[in-house]
Length: 381
Ligand SMILES: *Cc1c(COP(=O)(O)O)cnc(C)c1O
Image 1 (cartoon, helix red, strand yellow):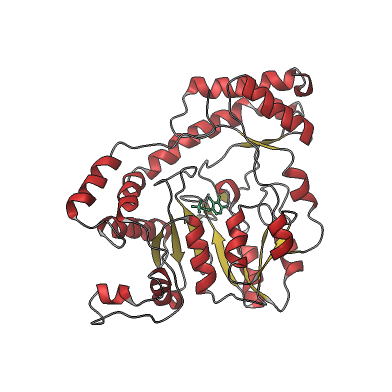
Image 2 (cartoon, helix red, strand yellow):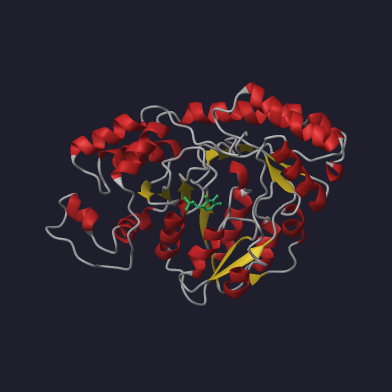
């Protein structure tokens, strides 16, 4: 069976974890945490990068930091992971779901403009598949209405738009290091802070609402509860694992890109035959091969393809079930207008196996299985 995902290990993870154990510092803010943070700050060009226990924790920190609360709204795509929205709903605020663009499946900037009200506090672009959203347009909208931009860049490490790294556009950005992401430590994330004015409070929010970070630096002689916060810090064991991956992040991305390109070339004739649609990458976006997805003509053929791939030993999977029509989305969110693209593409999308160590032969096997299933008319398989 070719699995959908297989987390990559660089081989140095064990050694670094042993180093952390030997160093006797296993909670947060240790040497590996600082190394990872500095790497992210340099590569992304953010003012500060704080490692968190998950991408979800980074999103929750971001919403807390912006002071978003009851009565406030945050505009985001319905076509995203649950926690983009739950981070907002947990503060008693309302996620406002809008449609995505048919090409990138990213937030539709025109739909965002329509959804802004006097309750809107922030826009949350989600860089689907590591392909950047139209950040200049979204940034202009935010500026015009005095809104924060918080990027859900969970897919987006080492991607850029207009040659600027994803996660560096908004006041805040969030990364995920979950097992399914390009660079991983099992569970982990980072909050990227681009707005200098938010840095001090970000440290407090991350440290359970205390000024412990200042205490650690010797700036105060004891620490105390000063604001709202929670336990968002990453364990040094995870940071040690993550450091092994960040050191190799460029190579991991290049390996994934080889797989992505191979699929893209191999599936071109199927697109020309009108059997599927390949990912569409705008010229401004340089992506990180986080995902390879194709769109089938309709839901039945999509479901049949997934089943046909399984019988050929390939695990292909669907993706986001739209949040605007989910049980909790209906309870906690607001929908702005009909979302025809979201409703349509979520039923037609298939993701193919993509991981750094996927070999040429396996890529050929996957692409061959797609080709064979479609040639037979997947309904009949
Ligand atoms: C993975 C992901 C998250 C959450 O990250 P975790 O580290 O799993 O908590 C949030 N948003 C998007 C778009 C994601 O893909």
